[in-house]
Structure formats: structure tokens, C-alpha cells
Length: 140
Image 1: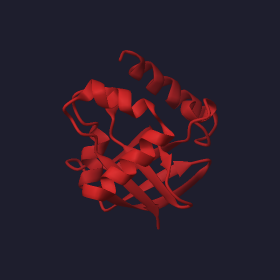
Image 2: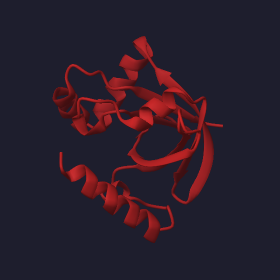
Image 3: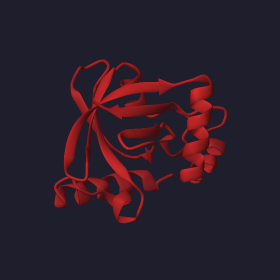
Image 4: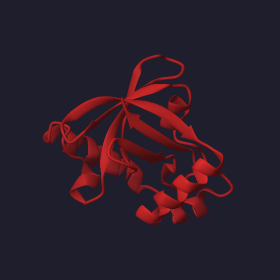
């Protein structure tokens, strides 16, 4: 789990060098975005780089795995409190509508996520009994 801070630092460097067009995950062939959402307590914009699962032409699926840690990632708590957020990917910024998935919609999305990125199943075992939060972000 110590890799997470090193990856985050490298991610910031790559994003700076490419002017936000690419991140570490992109260079590894895995799609990533920068998500900006208002802090639920501060009201200030908070930006984080995340792996996403393509879920349609203008739809992005986010999984709150937090590298398999026992706690939910802070960005997911901010998304819980938000109706909208902003994505920066491939040099483009745009607004998205936030939808936290539950019930059958969550189960179907979880299947799509683990099919696309099987590592989520390992992270889920590490985080047990925590159930990952899943979000569908749709371009506005």
C-alpha cells in the first residue's frame, strides 16, 4: 500500500508536464481523469486523479476502492454531497452529473468495472467488509 503516495506524486508530475492531457495511468494504457468536486465541508474545489471505466460515449464509472484500504476515499464523500462535478481528460474540461449507484444498478456497474479492471476484486478482498462506492458521471 506504500505505492499510493509515490503514484500520486508521479501522477501530479506527469499531469503537469502534459498540461493535463495524460496521467500515469494513461501512460500505462489505463484511462484516467482528473475529477474536481467541491469539498462537502469547505466548499472549495478538490481535484484528484482517478482511474475510470468507460461506460458509454459520455459516461464514466468511478469506483471508490481507495487501493483496498478499510476506509472510503475522501473524494467519494465529496461526490456523495454533489450533484455535479468537473472532469479534465485528454486536454478537455467539462461538467458532469453525479449519480451514486445502489441496488441492481450498482451490481450491474460492479460487474462492468471488474470485467474491465479485474484488480478491483483483489482490492475488494483487502477492504472487506467495506463495499466500494460506485458513481456514474454523465457529461452535461
